[in-house]
Structures are given as structure tokens and as C-alpha cells.
Length: 151
Image 1 (cartoon, rainbow, N blue to C red):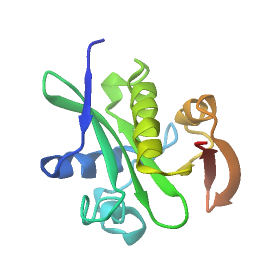
Image 2: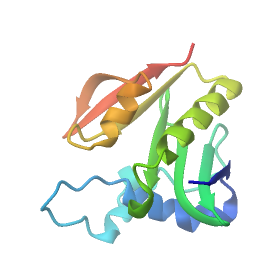
Image 3: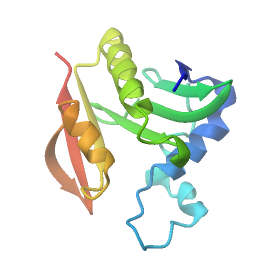
Image 4: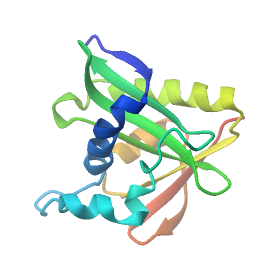
């Protein structure tokens, strides 16, 4: 599959909101979250003011100038936190792997030494994160916290 990866820009913010919503894992057979979950400060913090905070890094995967996935990170505490989503019809085709590779290079270039993320342990994406060397370091509600040293 031919796709391109480019930097996330201000005009991509509406797609980034879609990707934040898409990244909310819903186990098989359960109802999706209501869209207004994006109004919750624990969720909206990933997009509000995007690009105004020093250290925001984001990438968009696209085919024929149509976005199909995104990965982004923001610094909230000591380590920047990653968010990632790929549209359902494009999953399992190496897009997530490519986004992870490029983001880690960008993060190292920026000077980050560690990355973290949250994932529901039932989410198949967890296996991708483990392939990239992220390790389970704790729990937050029902989600795993995973970290990776970039050294």
C-alpha cells in the first residue's frame, strides 16, 4: 500500500479530533463512546491548543492527500505521551508501524529521551507497542501505562 507521512499542520486539527475519538478502544460487542467524550478534559488535552505548546509533534499518514491515520505526542509530565489511530479500513497494513518509526525519530531529534502511552490491554495495538519495545509500567483506571527509553 502506497501512503505518505507528513507533519501534522494546523489545518489537520479537525482530523486530529477524529483520530483522538478513533483511538478510544471499544471492546467487541460494546457500544462506542459518545462523541462528547472529546469534551472531557482528560481527552481534549491531546488536541486543545495543538501546535502552541513547545514540543508538540504530530504526523499524518495519507493516501492521495486524504488522511488515513495520525500519531502525535504532547508533553504533560516528564515524558511525552503518544496518541495514535488509523482509520478502520486501513488497519493491519503497516501504517501504524511506519507512523511509530517516524515519530520516534522525530522525538529523538527533538531531544526526548523517553516516550509513554496508555492502552487498554485488550486492544490489539498493544502488541504493536510491545514490538517497538514499550513495556507495561503501571495502571491508570483500566488502561496500561507503557514506556520506552529512546536512548
